[in-house]
Image 1 (tube, rainbow, N blue to C red):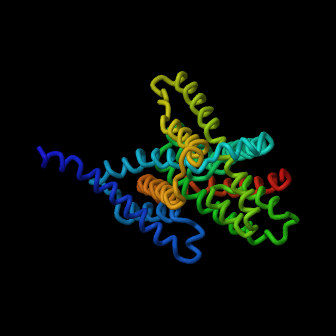
Image 2: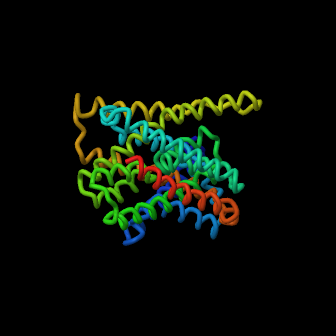
Image 3: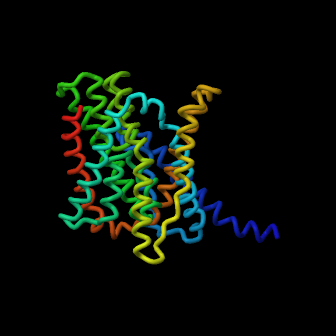
Amino acid sequence: MLTSRLTTYRPLVLGIAFTALLATAGFLIARFPYINKIGPLAVAILLAVLYRHFFGYPEALRNGIHFSAKKLLRLAIILFGLKLNIDVILQEGIPLLFRDFLVICFSIGLMILLARIFKADDSLSVLLGIGTGVCGASAIAAVSPILKAKEEDTALSAGIISIVGTLFAVGYTVIRPLLPFDAEAYGMWVGLSLHEVAHVALAGAPAGEDGLGMALLGKLGRVFLLVPLSLLLIWIMQKKGKQEEGNQITFPWFLVGFILMSVFGSYVEGRFFTISEEVMNGISTLTSFLLTMAMVGLGLSVSLKDVRQKALKPMLLLIVTSVLLSVVTYWLV
């Protein structure tokens, strides 16, 4: 009986351990100079894709890899809710949320429009538009189950947006001295236009505490809008499912966890009891690591043979969209 159970769970445990190993390698490699600008998530996805290319998919570990790609992904999104301080967003008021709303509509709408004009892959383009408008790879990971996106598309779009977003963040720091912005205005521009929270932190830091604080505030408003965006996508997919028999979508309950964690971090922690900064930093690191493990699991589904044909156009369109978003938000600040 015990031997039978060990045989059953062995592929699961080994598969999870394998994704953890590649995620750890991604974190270690991302500490090197220059590579640290890209971040561990993009590095880990690249490692997974290269492993699949040279060694093939590890079929014996499929159960554990799928567990990381699906279950751990949802856990990471739930924990990500702690990073969203709802109270701060509501205190800033409607003007900030309105600008963030415009950013999301512009990014998604433009990516879809360009994809149809230039006949780029629809699934990748939608995911990249959502990632650009909201919060990069985290937003892509959150909406992928709702959109029933392929694992390959999720991994590709997350990797692309991490790399392109890093290039833009570095570019922002280079041109900052040339801009007619004070620290707070520059920070708001960064928060409204860059892709991921990590990119916002990277580009906002040179503007000092005031600039970085404003950058993160602008970004958190976009993260806040991930919830209503997800609910809208659920409604659209359910409506589509009724038109296509057998294509019903199940409610992504991990979003409820995301909301509850956001409420907990905004209104419970710090008021009724306090979690130490060390523990909160540990949870943040765990969240990033779990998300990276999940992306490794997704990355293993990517075939390099298909990447050039499928991903090149969406990546170029992402760059165009990001440039135009930077221009538009420049005038919104």
